[in-house]
Length: 454
Ligand SMILES: Cc1ncc(COP(=O)(O)O)c(C=O)c1O
Image (cartoon, rainbow, N blue to C red):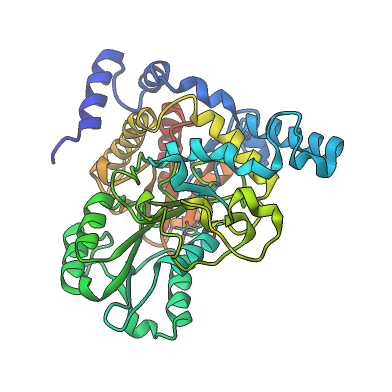
C-alpha cells in the first residue's frame, strides 16, 4: 500500500507527540493543540450530548458532530446578523429597503454575500449570484444553458446523481419535448465498483461528446464522497463542444474548487451543508465570465435579474444585467441572506486552502484509524483512498445488515453521522469545528459498539 502525503505527515506528528499510537488521547491532543484553525470551533454552537441524544452518558459534553455534509452547525454570528435584520424590520419596516442602520439596505442585500461566496468557490465576484435554492437554481441554469438541437440533445450525468438532480434533468429534457430514454446518458460505475473512474467518464465524453449538449456532475458525490476530477472533465467535455455544469452541494466550503480557472460554464450549490447558513438557506450560482455579456441568451427572467438602474421604473422590457446577476428572479430572502453573511464571516477568518490542509489530516486520521482498527468484514470505506479524490466525508459500509444498529448505537452516544440505506453511514469531520479528539472518541466508541454487535 502506498503511503499518502497526509499519512506521512501524521506519522511524523506521531513521532513528535511521543504518544504510543494514533488512538492515544495524547496524540489527538497534540494535533488539536497545533491546529491553526482550532479557535474557529468557538465560533459555533455545538449541541451537548444531552440535547441531541437525551439519556446519553455525559450529557454536558459537546456532541460529536459529523453531519456537516447534511446540515452544518450554527455559527454564533448567524444569530447576531439575523437579529439585526429583525430589529431593522421592526424599526424601519419598508424603509429598510433603502435606509439600513447596519449599512445593508435590503434592495442590495445579495451584494453583501457575493464577494465572499465567490472566494469560497474560486470565482470572480460578478460570476456569482446568491439566490433561490439549489434545485431551483439547477433548473434556472438548465433553462439558460441546455439548448438541445437535433444533433446535440443529450445530457450526461452520474447514474447515482442525487435524486433531485436526476428529476430536474429528466424534466428539463421532457420540457424540450425530448425523451430521457434517448437524451439522458447516465455514467455507470464498472460492474462490482461504486466509484466512477475518470477514464470511463472521459471515454463516454470522447464517444458521445458530439451529441451531448450538457455534462452535469456533482463536484463531490453525495453517497460515496468521491471528488470528481472537475478540471479534467470540464476540459475534455468542452473540447467536444459541450457545456459543463457542476452541482457543488457537497463541494462548496469543503474543497477549494476553482470555477473560474477551470473554465466551468455554470455551477450551483446550497449553503446549508459545509457553508453552515442554516436549514433551507439561500443558494448560489456561478456563470463563467465568458457568458457574462451574452445577454441574448434565453433565460427564465425576473425583475431581480433586470438592470439595477431601471429596475424600479417598471417598464416591461427586460434588460438583463451582465454576469450571474442577470439570472436572478426575485428579491432575495433577507433573513436567509443575512444568515449566510454570518456564516461566511467565519470563512473570512481562514482560507479554503488552509481548511483543506486541516481536512487532509483530519479525514486522513479518520481513514487511518478505521482501516487499522476494523476488519473488512465489519466495515469498508467506499470513499476513495486517495485524499485528492475526496473531501471531508468518508462513507462507511457496515456489513452483515447491521448499519442501522450501528447508526442508532452511535446516536445514543451523542455521535451524529447520517445513514443512507441500505448500508452506508456518512461521517464528515468538517475542518471548521471538528477536533482530532472527536475523531478519536468516535473510533473508540465505535470499537465498543462493534464488539457488542458483531
Ligand atoms: C447533490 C445534491 N443536489 C441537490 C440537493 C437538493 O437540494 P435542495 O433541496 O436545496 O434543492 C441536495 C440536497 O442535499 C444534494 O445533496
